[in-house]
Image (cartoon, rainbow, N blue to C red; front, side):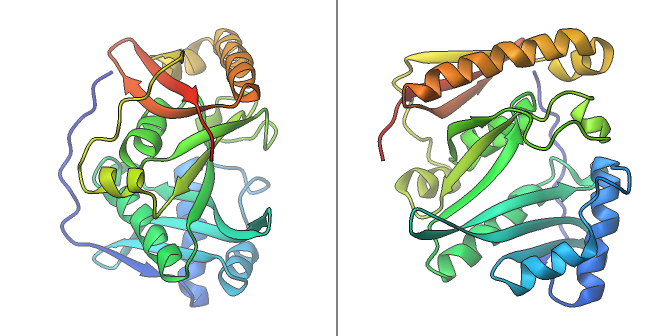
Length: 252
């Protein structure tokens, strides 16, 4: 699978969205990115509540035009706070141009300033470009797989499939993350397991949904097998014909 290189957005600006008009702009972006029906879209009030209760909303602009956003909620588990990044969306014409990375870095900077060392989010196991970005570029690891987290939605991006999701753990102050963000390759995983997904999976989802659901089910069984044995995804290889999730034993 090749990745088309596109020019960065030279006039990109990232800012915290707090005023209601800024938060409202995220609603239009959300609908444009995911093409949800009104019933599946996150309403404006949720953006406002997230911003007012310890989460955050960041907006990306090309000059004064909103082109992307990030929405995160305050979260708490096992006696420690973290941020759950529920949505990061970028308009189609601005993808692969550094906008998503800039939004994630804004989230990281805000977490570090608040003394929060973990940001989590979920992503589709079949979205291989996202997997490469999350694991290979940002340095997230994966230790959990959640079948059909949101149910079947109206978004064409979900292809009518169960919304199976991997949980990305981004330990924002870890040496692994710092090295990758500085352009230093992370360690090569002592791989004990690989889970392969066809590189053309999105075409299969569009053209052969029953075949795609079978591939998804096989991946689900593999992830559940290995995560139950305390393996984590610590690497990702994106090749011409397949994407490979690389797993190894992992302890905190």
